[in-house]
Structure formats: C-alpha cells, structure tokens
Image 1 (cartoon, rainbow, N blue to C red):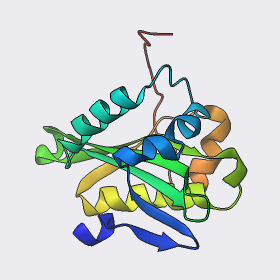
Image 2 (image 1 turned 180 degrees about the vertical axis):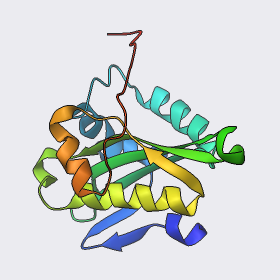
Image 3 (image 1 turned 135 degrees about the horizontal axis):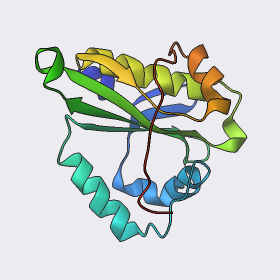
Image 4 (image 1 turned 180 degrees about the horizontal axis):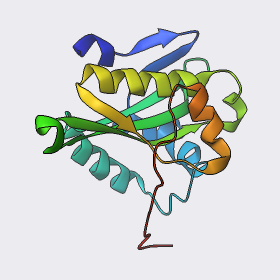
Length: 158
C-alpha cells in the first residue's frame, strides 16, 4: 500500500498526494474549472489540508503535476467511508475529478480515475462510487464505471 502512494513519474507528470505548496502551483485555478471555489485563501487551504492529513486513512487527495511547468494539471479525491454494511466494509467515494483544460484529451483523466479506482480496491473498499453530470457519464463509462442509481442532493449554499 505504501508503494502506491509514493510519488511517481509518468511521461513528465508526477502523481502524488496534495501538499501545502500546491497552493502556489495552481490548485485554485485548476479546481475553479470544475466548480465554484469561492475565496479559498492560502490560510483556509492549509487549514483544510491539515484536517485531511489528520485523517490519512480517509482522505486521499491526488494531484498530477507537470514537471516542465511545475503546475498542477489534474486533481481527484478518494474519500473512504467506514460502513456498518458489508460486515463493517468500506466504500470509496471519488470526488472533485478535474483536468486542466489545456491538458484534456491526453488520457490524464482516465489515468487519474483508474488510479483512484485501483486505490479503493487496494484499500479494501467493497465498491467505489461517484456522482457526475449526465453529459460526462460516457467518460466514466470508458474508465470502467457504470450507472447504477440516481443521485439526489440538497445544496445548502449557492
């Protein structure tokens, strides 16, 4: 398991866990292509990352960094939920998958999702799930996921 989470390089891109220095490497710009980030200051970023790092068996925030530009080009999170179901099994939730617009179409997104799915398996999750917009469902099907249920949500903020 430790080996899987060690930084590694593939074709000029390092795959690794999110670090505090990533605030300066474009994490805000990257995440804002996915959804509203709001006023995420460096202080809030570091405090949130510290919280996630205090739960290393629950939060696996993965980034892809381009070595040539030293900018983040992809981000995704695997959140591991301990359940009472399945004899106290674990469920993996893939969240916040995003690839920089100038890097889309190069297979980076598929590599990221495959990495997160494989990580969930290695962590002993009995399933891994994610929510996505209908228009990108085909991408996740290419990554080996299938539509099973309907997602329901209630947002408490705009």
